[in-house]
Image (spheres, one colour):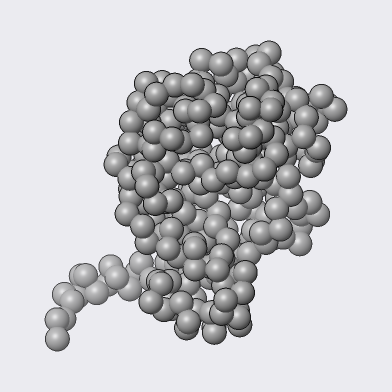
Amino acid sequence: MKVLSPVLAFVALAVVTSHAALSPEQYWNSKLPNTPMPKIVQEILHPELFGEKSTSVNVGKGGVHVNTGKGKSGGGTRVNVGATETQIHDDPNVALFFLEKDMHPGATMTLHFTETTEKSSFLPYQVSRTIPFSSDKLPEILTKFSVKPGSEKAELMKNTIEECEQPSIRGEEKYCATSLESMIDFSTSKLGEIDQAVSTRVEKQTPMQKYTIATGVQRIAGDKTVVCHKQKYAYAVFYCHKSETTRAYMVPLEGTDGTKAKAVAVCHTDTSAWNPKHLAFQVLKVEPGTVPVCHFLPQDHIVWVPK
């Protein structure tokens, strides 16, 4: 049996102890003392403090998974951006995806900020380490969380695990974080010191309506970011991926009814590995790898920005 040296054993014990001894908030503050916690993280940690539900952003009606990989679904940004191909032909003004050059004050697009019923909470770090998270352990996982095999929830959990197990697309490193602490650890290990952790914020749920980009569009990240997407699961799991081919912006929006939002927009600067039939190319009438393709992120997604 391999025995750790006293130094390595001490380091390993210190790492485990540091996670176990601190609450999630304390761990955040110890690792990210100058980084405000995004509202979505606060909501997950303390749902009792927030009356409103978290929201996702749909553009138009219907539903489409933003999936940047080729062939089988997986390995890219996952956002329900909500427009069908039929609707695009029916309503050419629906702004599902947009070009980076069109992200300027005065530009308008039809958006729908919708409530999501996804309310799963973070598990304590030490607990998350003891629970399997793999396809071959799915029956055990379902039993542990009293989820009936074959049910809708079981299928959603199965899909989340399968997405997490799929290989990364070119230029990305991926990781599924099963605790807040592990999401912090992945992001800091890939980016170093963190400057910001940001997410989309909207005043309230609204019907589908026109939103106008207000003054104050701010580029918050260069080409190097980690983006984490909340998944459908029995507890809070975030699909995180590091990319060096994205730029992130904070975009102030104002709806026709006066509702204000600060939406995070992500622009993919290298789409050459995307499926040529991707909806974005149909909407924008551009070819893969030619121009940056942008879209907004729902409120339950987090963009980590390095200093």
